[in-house]
Length: 464
Image 1 (cartoon, rainbow, N blue to C red):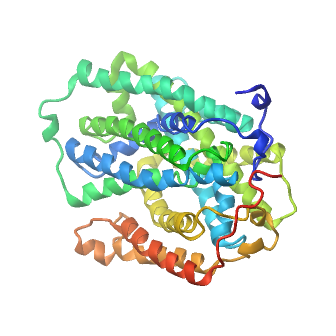
Image 2 (image 1 turned 45 degrees about the horizontal axis):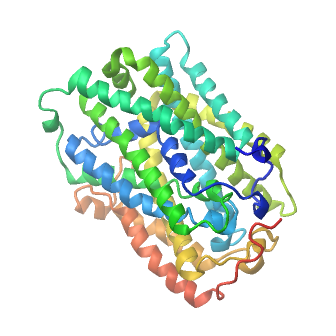
Image 3 (image 1 turned 30 degrees about the vertical axis):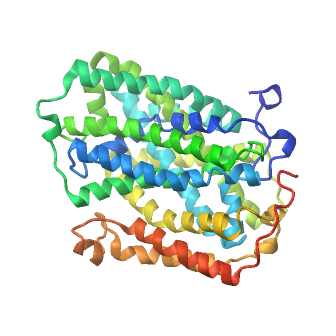
């Protein structure tokens, strides 16, 4: 960090001044790689061989394809930050209107809380597994406090923290993989364990794709400080490969562990399979949990400020407001984590499924509007106008497409909570998110081109 940035971040949701833009697109690679080096990513990969019952080969293919496809949508958001200089959910006002964006922003706050709590539970359980005399709740709080400290400092420390975790947690992942493969040893007939089913394969592919799509609301929050001349291709590929590689590797480790443990307890399996090395491995992964959760808490604070500024458009919150809100979200997440830890795997799977159905229509509207309707040209001051400026309070084409995008997925849903009639005909294969993207994208494009005003030039990017 430069001397100017070696302090608590002052900015919140307003445009970053041009003289304070800094960094390189390549830093987005280590941000997203390091953020994914956590036990939550490992457990997510283990769903393929535990919940979905797939063989390792089937699991590996579904994990790889899901991440490769889902990351396209995540990385397309990366170019929006340098272009507009504002957080992702503020920019959503340009697609949904100032008031119309409220529901989506509130939903995203809930998403951040869910991921924060999920990381806390797994981080606390993993630390408790190697430090049994230290209570699970206490482990959870310690990891949470480390995340809160990084969030209070802000953007630059989070970048630095995840850059460090690229090497630290990356080393833990490498050590775990080598130990399980060559010291513990894979069981006889490892590749023949489990099976292939279409429902399980596409179920895991959907989970892996959502893992990436769920990052879409985060991306501009961490690229908005980059100079506006940062090439969109640079931001895209750095984010894309950082998130894909950083997700696939720990997910594959999770799929291996899931195949080798009979009861589906991945954390206990990780400790048992890595033997004497488990202490250092789990501690290093716990540090990664704190880094990833700092991102969740930071984005949650910015999204919460966005909600508040919609209600009080003259409010100009600074670092103090961001810190107070981060502490409030941290406290709520601690409570959620303590309540949900007993049935974590079931709660987490249902949470991921819910996110899939509500986030896909948002990302379709956002990307079509940015790239195909307005070609990246927005009136930034209108994002903060009391009446929504040129975008108004509501963008009805976007809102209608968002609602329709959720409804159109219902017949294609296949989950423990509900299976739609078309999903049942497909043998339990869930393709709802594909249907949502395929339907919402062209419909919104046609409505937007017909009913919205012509694209506007970028106004005062980074001013203020």
